[in-house]
Amino acid sequence: MLLDLSKIHGPRHVVERTFQPTAFDPQDEEYRVAAPVELSMVVEKAGGDAFRVVGSAQTTLEMACGRCLEAFRVPVHVNFDLRYVPHVQNAGEGEEEIEEEDLATAYHREGLIDVIELLREQFQLALPMKPLCSDDCKGLCVECGANLNRTTCGCQPRWEDPRLAALKGLLKSEEKS
Image 1: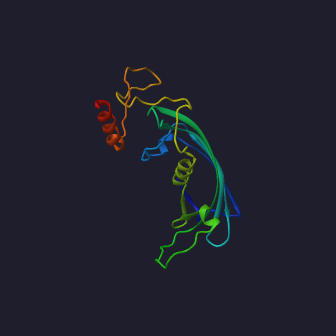
Image 2 (image 1 turned 90 degrees about the vertical axis):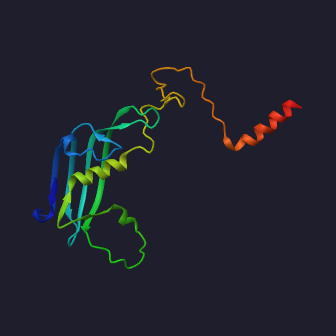
Image 3 (image 1 turned 180 degrees about the vertical axis):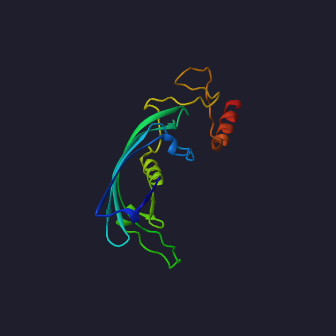
């Protein structure tokens, strides 16, 4: 959905909309939108070609567990407060220091805001660093790949640090003498 900023008359414009999961292409492999997205936001003129967008969205995302790789769902509620300014091509005029307000600045092109892209960015920021289906997830067996949450295997994982091979050789030579 593209929000046309030129059609905003008055100081405030309220957008309340529900997006079906099919509106979000599964282009992102980290998560999948698994439930309708409830969006509520207010667009305000902020002087010149700048706009302030304040709102919230909630849905359920599905992602793979970082230990066992099983899919699990997590409810997400995001709040955002963004400043949209026109996109300008950078002429490469050197380095600039990023100010605190720059972290909440986004860009609109030709007076249009892609609301789906705005939501994608907010969902990406809401993802956990290490997604886990549960805090006590046991993960996968390093030998046979079995999901240790569902089954037990007879594997005895033994990993030897190759950097210690020389020391192991010393122990063997000591045992012989």
